[in-house]
Amino acid sequence: MTDPYILRLSRNCYYVCLGLCAACAIGGLLLTVFHISLTEINPWPCTLYTAVGLYCPGCGGTRAVSCLLHGEWIRSFCYHPVVPYTALLVACYTLSHTVSILTKGKVKAMLFRPIYFYVMIGIILLNWIIKNAFILADGIYLIG
Image (spheres, rainbow, N blue to C red):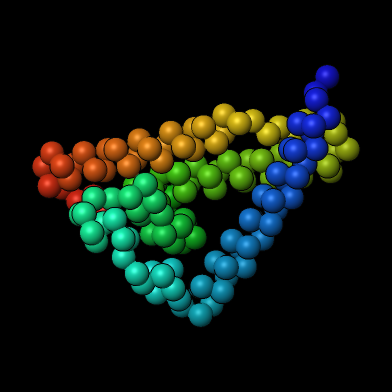
């Protein structure tokens, strides 16, 4: 039997994921209709990159989101792998809960697991370490 707290937390996460999906869909539609690039909305460079010449853990995130909204999954992964990971996780989570609701619980939904966030943090740190290792070792800047 599953803990009622986990079930309630999972359902609340489902509502957050639904909101994220709706916001991304509306935002992507507006960006497409008005031909706006995400880099036009946030034109400022990364402070750490400007000051020290090294990437911060979030560098490439805006470009990754932009590529993801344009359907360029591989390019999005190259800019920042946590963005497609999160999109895939949110999509699976939302879809599983929607199917569970529609089938009145006959199909079990994904439950909230802290490991999803630990993997996300690991991806962010690994991405940050690898990209800065290229800079420090060979002077290769992977993000334009």
